[in-house]
Length: 106
Image 1 (cartoon, one colour):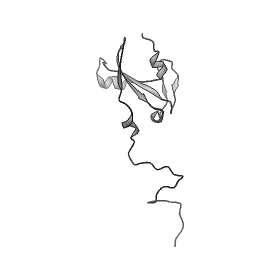
Image 2 (cartoon, rainbow, N blue to C red; image 1 turned 90 degrees about the horizontal axis):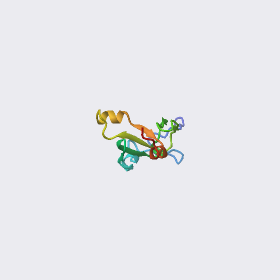
Image 3 (cartoon, rainbow, N blue to C red; image 1 turned 45 degrees about the vertical axis):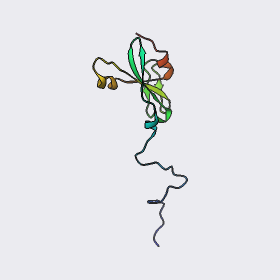
Image 4 (cartoon, one colour; image 1 turned 60 degrees about the horizontal axis):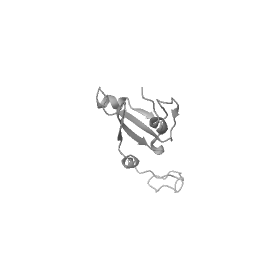
């Protein structure tokens, strides 16, 4: 009958394999849209990043400590950047929630 193989091509995943829907990540759809916060240093878009979507390490601009993968945090960019929306997005920063809430205004 031929050699046995561990390949499950075409078969349903075993209970030990995690089934992943092809090309469908609905978590981004379910995340809320960025909110606008007004502050003495301008208007800011603030986007909450849940821990499941936090995949890279970033450095918080306030405390300069890392934001590790799996850590919920905020992505912040200026709404009214003097060089336009594209530049604002390029200059977005990842913040700890507490650091953003207690940030210093220069």
